[in-house]
Image (cartoon, rainbow, N blue to C red; front, side, top):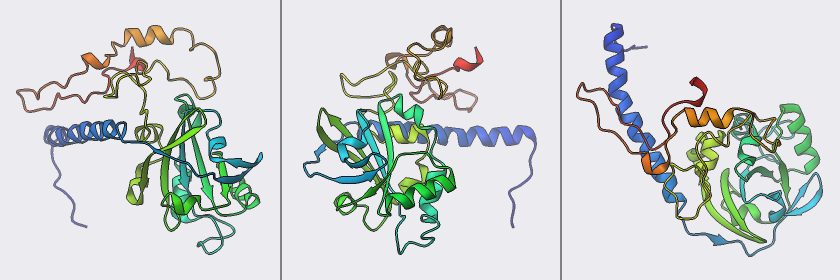
Length: 268
């Protein structure tokens, strides 16, 4: 194994600062890409689909669980897949293992669900064995073929307007590698993170960063935890109109901020 050179602390920090410039460029590019996703045209889903779930036979609209947005990951768990019947596909199982607590997505009016072709009893058995808690449904028709996930895994995003359902985006192949975190899921949706710093079309729902964050077991409370909004105020969080990149410093270190909010509520 040919290792990199061993350097002093000052040299290491200088190397990190040089790389940080590129990392922040990537962050801004990722933000810009998410902004484009929020401007993608919507495709109405006119066909009826049926899934087997814990409450019986349900529709695609039912998968929203009353929320405005839905993300569906097609996991391969069925006869013929390596690991059957004890396990789902190894890659899909890794995706399931890294799914963040769903309460944070739900707080942004978004539901995450998995879907497979295995019978529901097998899905429930494997969920219990692996400690997975996300809603996981059994497909009963051509949903997978119609949404590009009949031969390979993939993540579809939907939004609803009343009873009308629209497909808004689709990620598959290596794009699924980064999925699992709250932010990566929200960034692929039509509404995004719904925070003021984001570049979103006029009229999209947005709140201040940090303001909506909560412990996952306290989102059901009607009001934020006592003192939290005051903490947000004290952090100096900037709204979108004040979030502007700053130029690189004359010393060569990068002081450029992406458009996400500065500061930390937790440290004030």
